[in-house]
Image (tube, rainbow, N blue to C red; front, side, top):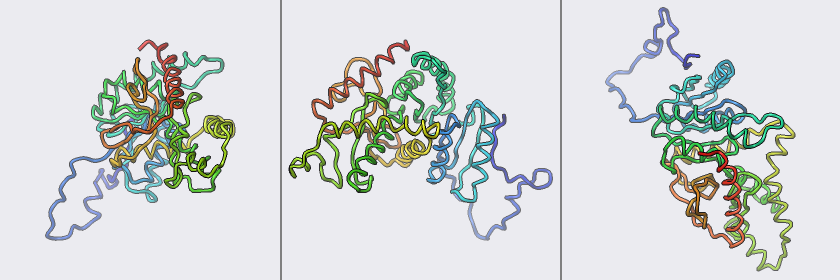
Length: 350
């Protein structure tokens, strides 16, 4: 499949109509060329990849969006479908190819590709197949965009982010997993729903593994700037631990519920990853709970492990991890989550 883009060469003999369609005004100078055009590449055009691509396009975030997939017909179809919406979107060049050269010069590469789990297949075997796939993907991305930031979305995201870090040779600040950014959004939604407030006024984090061992940071939740648990305590309003655990359980089970109902998740993860892309490309320096190299944070030591912590994101990737106060219980839960990831990671042998 050849690289495909929009073209203005529609006239006889391939005449570039852009040169004759507009009459230039007098007394002008050629505009100065900008030093750099912003480019994002999305690897994998399944439901998740296309939800991310579509959301990025609506944000007027990039000058160029590149799509890569192993299936040329689906890839071209998705590219054309997006290009045909050009009249309704900010101007963005959209290109696609099965060849990774199309990603050349990317500022951010978002990887959503991953092997599907076969019936009866073990998690470890699935991971081994994903490892083999990533050994083909990551070196190509590094080759064509050696200065890019790599954002990993495929699951299990924490282990695969570690895999990409090892395969890429990039510094840890330039390898990020989408982690619990979406889990935290679900958490905020459920708390907001209980309190009948806007979810944007709820500050709450899920950290650790993007999975069953994730940790809800109840001690640091605030609503409209008011620390939630301490406020309830001062008001002598009792809240049962079981109630809190049930909310967290709903967060963990949310993705499974959506998958059981519609077959896959797409829109929420699309918005979640697009928000990460915006914070990085626009250097917003916002705090997101994403999968980062966690060694030496919150008492996590020993082997290298990636898991979600509240991190500040900007143009150079991870700028730092916030010093959120954790209770002793939350720290122990976070260490358990780290060990859960390491148990799987160590079986990969990389």
